[in-house]
Length: 153
Image (cartoon, rainbow, N blue to C red):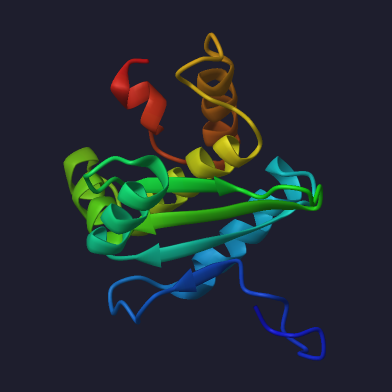
């Protein structure tokens, strides 16, 4: 993150490398909106990277030997910082094609899903709380169908 002497706000979305087909500015603005509206002013950072890096992170932190679309890493001990997200751009591209929308929209869907995990939601154990929150926010933010709705969970 930039130091406090920079005139620019800190970047919430970090690209591991430059991806020609994904615009950074709109995703930065969306992440700012998520932080303000969904996370109630709490910070997070989202890394956009390769499927290989997500597979490495998944193996290292979740002991799952596979790639995935989004990972959430909650922060401990700092109530103002929720944690970090990592999104696989190749997964986002493929899912966008599959569901008939733009890659940037799929990244937004993944960001919202991951952020809800950072906020303590868990669709595997919370009796539909995360599904309802994701659906409500997806509608407010004008996003296509979310991950939980797609899986039928």
